[in-house]
Image (cartoon, rainbow, N blue to C red):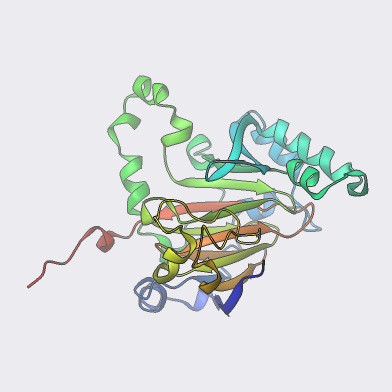
Length: 296
């Protein structure tokens, strides 16, 4: 089933965008935007990428391979998300390299191919490797109140309690993602109706966005369950409004950052074979969003 595209996400030079410009043009209007030119000096863009643009998987495996991470099986659904399994980064990369050597013509069905694809998600890289400065937060995203709160939450100061609560799963909202061509993320809106920004260290991603004013169109008539995959055969009986939805589309290239506004549902696909769909993802909850104006 096709989706109706009503426009494309604007792409601007981030070096020419002041904080005030960003607030007025995108934050206050709650509009997505792609920013270029803000990743030139990032360590991750040098260490994690080979000269030919492919991800430097041996570097990632040798330096961070012991980390335990959550990996999504892109061919298996688990309620509203993909099935998750835990493995080490080195195990994930080994699987990726093995998959890249396979002859896809020998895979009998598209479903079999999908089940071969694993997508590393929600790796709390910054918390785990605080001394490795993988990136610099752009000025326009500096008001990160959600992570500021979590950084100073009391459980982080009590190491015993912290470990019991699993510091890898609940420490912050700064993530690294990695996946090969064909890996994807089902339709969703970000946690706590927060804003987020995601940077492509290498690879290419396709995004489809639905504005908050239309989010009811991807839910069932009881507003309990949403569409899982906008490109599958969506049941008109279960989701009667889906065909009316009008989407924004964009392709995020290497060294580009995308701003995801509050309440925008989105589905994301990695497009480049053998290239890392890696992202540094921060959840940004701007201060004034915490306030509800009083009625006069």
